[in-house]
Length: 158
Image (tube, rainbow, N blue to C red; front, top):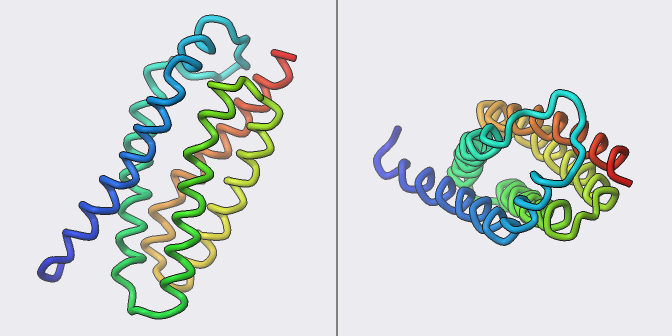
C-alpha cells in the first residue's frame, strides 16, 4: 500500500461496522423475540453464526468502500460511493423491518431491493475496480441466502 492509504480502510471499515452494530443494537429486542418465537426454515444456521458472519461481511464491505474512495476523483467515483452508502442505509433498515417490526413480507421486498443494489454496485465496480467488486461477492452470496431465509420465515410465520 502507498503511504497513508490505510486510513481510508480504517475509516470505511469502522463506519460500516458501526452502521451494522447500531442496526443490531436497535433491533436487539426484536432479535431476542424472533429467536424465541419464530418458526425458521431448514438450513437456518445457529444464532451465533450471524454476528460472526456480519462482522466479516461488514469488514469486506468497508474495504470495498475504501477502494472506491481511493479511485481518481470524478463523477464515477462519486456515484459509486453514493451507491455504496445507499445500499448500506438499506442494509441498516432491514434488521429493524424484519426483527423489530416483524414485517417479514416487507422485509423480503426490502431485502430483494438491497440484493439488486449490491448487484448494481458490483457491476459498476467490475469496470472501475475489479478487486473491489470481488470483495462484495461474499456479501452478495450471503444476501442470496438471506433471501431464502427471509422467504422461509415469511411463509412459516403468517
